Image (cartoon, rainbow, N blue to C red; front, top):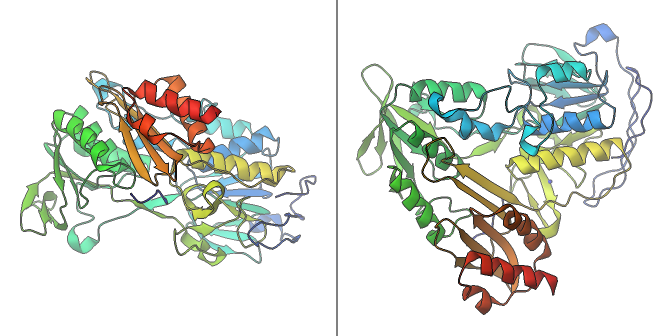
Length: 483
């Protein structure tokens, strides 16, 4: 099975609009080491008062970066955030999980899931940013950059000045073209609160829902649709659910669970176009074989693209997409960094470049970057790939699902357990444990997974294959770690 391939030191000075000194140390992948200074133009020329640090983006990475600035006492009067979002940074995963629950099943709503509650931190509401002296620009995406002059232009025409710039723009949803019905009324993509609100409005009136895509988004949205007791079909071209991670046998377990909840599957299917009814709203999904699936609501979950926007000239990675950075999240331009989903970074433990679209990486990359920017931290980001999903968690659900995966899904697989409720999959390559996925584990068991994936112990495959339970298999792996 193919593996998941999903990347500063400053001289702190008293705050001034006129001078910013930046002195990065040498980079392990060849990024230049230099010091940069600039002389700012008159204050009236720029919309932002806080100019020492500017974050572009309003998602998880931006929220956790802001918290790290505050922890270092470097936010008040110094930090500005400019975002296309209408809200202060929030925990985006909620949008395809609890936010979509029906009203009678206690759905999540803001301000309940502002960052950084997802990791047990403080809820950073709009008032929090005001109290911390952080300047916020909402609903005004950045459309241009002048690297030499260290200025940004926003959609409304504002000019913003920066000393150090942190790009945290995340991703945009991959969309169907207009010519095949990609923007018909009733066709939805979920990347922000407005998208999710629009989908909820459709779900309230829906009878037949079609979810296009068998990955994370498709699985989570289909599970939410079950909570609305709607006729739900998932369509995808692959042979089984989540092929980037799940083995065919593991996918079969989850597919059976969804089918028990009334969800139908059309696997290996290619879509020709989305058809409108007489009123112009989506009415059917037409397949390449000529058949059609009736639908009054369609959700497209076919992946995402890094939101590079006006920052292409910083240097893109042609293999994984996104802005190329080093182990401190420095781009090729002085004083400019990229974090979260948009960054192509060196995945140290597997010696390859990766771009990871996951909330855990968004949080950790933000913290690592800002600590490196504000302190003497010089070690390279050493990320352990981690993915998880939680579905069917609304009130009244007969079975709640929560799995976690750590590591790399390379080599041969060993599956233990009967999914009632636990199941574990181990990836073993050249005798070493490379990755592990666990469904419905205990807190202690879940805490063991990253230790196994990072430790990559040599394991006795025969002994692991003969384990009579998930608990026994995990104990064998734990013992191997201690050898």
